[in-house]
Image (cartoon, helix red, strand yellow):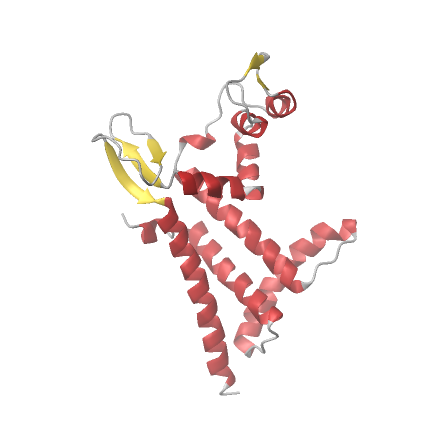
Length: 217
């Protein structure tokens, strides 16, 4: 199965890619003050009404006003987080709750650096402990909000294999050579590179087609 197919194998992934192209196109058009054809104006106004409208609604009680390009960056940020969330979910067991997973245990681990039962952890990172003992919804929220930590993990362990003995999905560094019972599935770097290139080409396509249509106005 190719990385290109994996990057677009669900309707959520396709919608996320489309939304990323629209938001990135709106960002470029806003920053460079590019005029838009009527067709693209309808699409972009719909996007602004939905996504910018949600941001305005959230920030209104705080009396914070963001320029349009900043709202596009916020949308893009969360779309990237959503892509990492989908990648995590596709790889299975990371979102299975353990016996001690709870909001209480997560914050106790963050505050005191100890596992449930007041056991000193073998791991020094409090953030790591908090994540390990968070319920699924909390881990998913953290992966969307702080997707940079997932990016670092994926960069350090990009090659994904299936263990044919127990069926588990395992990841390794780019230089590691696994044993014969592990079947290579895909490289995480390639998947996200494909998605990034798709967005860049999509934005270029929007700008080119918009310019072409403008010649006929």
